[in-house]
Image 1 (cartoon, rainbow, N blue to C red):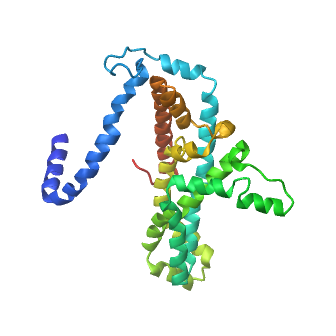
Image 2 (cartoon, rainbow, N blue to C red):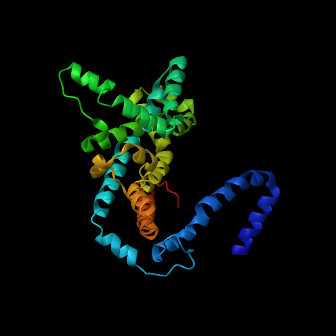
Image 3 (spheres, one colour):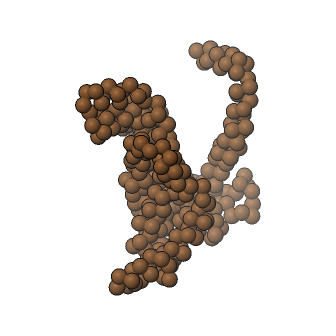
Length: 305
C-alpha cells in the first residue's frame, strides 16, 4: 500500500512538476530552519558549556529536568505564560471574528474599504515601533497620564506597573492583530451564496438570525482550525514584544518561560538548562494541540486529523 502511495505521489509530481518546483523553496526553508535545529534537543541531556562541541559534551541524563522541578522561578514563569495565553485566547481570538461579522454587515462600500484598510495597518508596523509608541503614550508625561491629571487622578507609570502589564499586552495584541485576522473570516463569509441570505430575508429573518443560522455555521470550520492553532500558542506568548516591554519591575507578571529561557540560557550561558525548559514547553504545547484537536473534532466535526 505504501509503494502504491509513493507511485501515485510520483505521478502527481511529474504531472504538476512546475507547481512542485514553486513549492520547493518553502519545503527547503522549513526543513533547514525548523527540522535541522531539532538536533539541538540533545543539549537538554548533555552538559554543554559552549567551549566543546555538542558531540564531545558529556551525557548527564535528566539532570536539567530535575533542576527545573527545584527552580523556584519556574512556577512563576509557567503561570505567567499560562495566564497570558488564556487571556489571549479569551480576548484576542474572538476579536477578528466579531470584526469580520461587523464588516460583513456594513453596506457602505467606501467606508467599509476605508475601515478595513485602517484595521489592517497596525499588523504591518514592526513590534519595536509598536512598543515604542506604547511607551510614549503610557509614559509619565504621555497622553494617558495628561488625561488622568486633567480629571484629578494621579499619574501612573504604566510600563513599570506589574499589575498593568497583562492589560497593556493583551490590548496591543488585539489592536495589531484584529484587522489582519479578520481577513480569513471575511474570505470564508464571501463564499456564502447570496441566495441563502435572500431566502432568509423572504422568510422574515432579521440580521442577528442570519448571522446565527447562516454566517456563523459557514465560519465554523475556519474557527475550529484557528482555535486549535491558537491553543498551540497558549504557551508561546509573543517573546519579542515581552522582551521589549518588560523590566525587572514587571517580572512578577511579565516573565514567561520564553523570556526566562532567554535570560537563564543565553545571557547566563546556561545553554543545556535553557534547552530543557524550552523542550518541556514544546511538549506541553504539543499535548495542548492534540487535546484541542480531539475536543474540536467531537464538538464541531472539524479538526486537523
